[in-house]
Length: 443
Image (cartoon, rainbow, N blue to C red; front, side, top):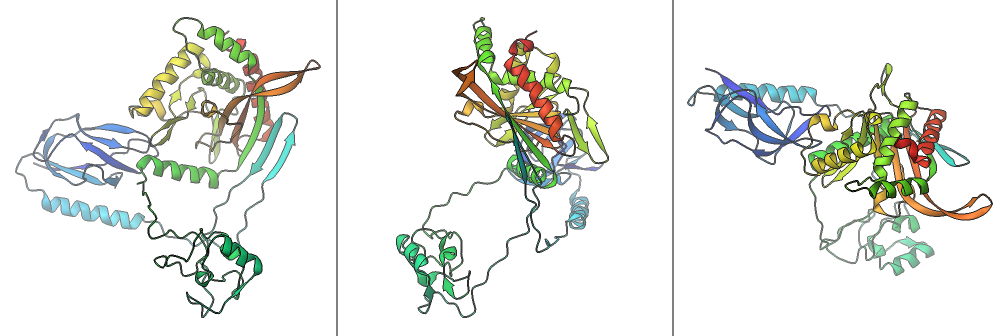
């Protein structure tokens, strides 16, 4: 006879919390070993959870739709249907609580006076380069109202410019606090105030500078899901902890688009521009293995396999399923695999192996229309990500004649600890050559 505690499993390397989407069992059920007992929503997808233990379901502690930390107790099984479990559960929960308290982080106040380093920029023919490190910003200071200030203050001074703006925006100056100078209301005090500020008596702004919602203003609150939380944490990490470099180059796409048209005239063939990009990036990585890497503290890991993560937009956020060994696959195979992975991603059916890992990421917004250029945030721990913009017509001088050509701009974001500007430029030159001579991608 024994009491078995079912804990929230870690279903991905980046998962620290999870949500029970649905329970497949109920209290009183007899569960067999390897039976699916729940669907767990992780930071990446929803995964079926198989219990390794058998027993009677005595207590479900986490309701469907609720969130818990990895390794938290979510259910209790016992070997026998009527076995006493309450005392053992209370002891286990007390240990869990004590462990959580001991592991709680201590808040560290940001030092005052920290300044952000200024990003350096340089341009060259056909490519642009910028380097910068984004620091963690200290929390904003709360500005107190000047001593003696009261709402409905009748004795206040206002600059002429501020008075005109207040009249244009129907702002009640009696409700505005002169926080900039402490004595007189100036433009800076009004710049973030909404139209009609202070006119509604129900609006108790107290003169604070900044947006204050009207009491009658409809507000839709959207819960932040597990995936969006994970994306937020990882993107903040990528932006604050990694020094990055951006390099952009234009690519003429006329030959590629002509070849794509010829290939898609074959029955059953449907190759996208993104499929060409995946293949070209894979071959460029094979030619420049130093880009196919990740920074890992005391060393740089250079991957043997070229596994391309392809960003796919889904309702909850973004996920990056992987085309494994993309340099060894043809365009048709890549196309079929990307379509299959994208469909599984949108259905929340990706397995861990299909989205964990990857050595390089591609983010393509070209299908969304007039996107001339953009930069993508790194996908840690990978050292690089490629942003692919839309294909636009441009006029260029070709052999002494003005000609319209189709141009796509691609931007690589690199971890500068692994990839410097020269290496990034060499990689893009190889990629550009492959895309502009696309027959190399089908040989």
